Length: 204
Image (cartoon, rainbow, N blue to C red; front, side, top):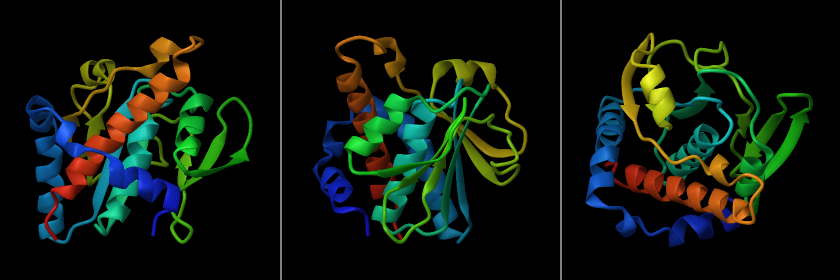
C-alpha cells in the first residue's frame, strides 16, 4: 500500500488530460510492459537523461510507484545519465512534498537518498550515475530517454532490449526563479500522470 498522501495524489491525476499525440508517444512503453507481463518476464526500466539529476529520477520514482499502485509485479526501475552529477535537491523536495519519505543516507558531492513510497517496500535509491553504471542492469532492460539531448546522444544503448524516447521539458530552466517550486511540481505531476496512464493500460 502506498503512503496515503501519495495514494490520494495518484487518485486525482487526470489521465484524460493527456493528448492523443502524447498517448502515441507512450504507446511503445505500454506495449513493451504488456508483452513482458503476458510472458511473465521481469520488467527492468532504465530512465535516462543527460545529468541524471531531475527528469530521470522523477520518472524512475513515479514508475516504481505506479507499478506498485496497479499491482504489476516484477517491475524494477532505474535511472542514469550520459554523465554523472547529483540528484538536484529541489527534485527530491518536490517528491517529498507529494508524500514520499526521503532520507539522506550518504552526503558529499553526489548524495544518496532513500526514497520511500510505501512502508513495506524497498526504497528507491536516488543518486546520479551513468546509465551503464554497475548499479544499473547491463542486459535485459528497456532504455527510456527522458530528455531530447540524451535521445540524440545515445542513438544506440548497448544491451538494451528496446530504446523508447519519452521526453520532457527540463524544469532546470526555472532554477533560481520565483516559479521554481511550481514548475518542478508541474513537471513531476506531468510525469506521474503519464506513468499512471501507462500502467493503467496494462492488463493482468
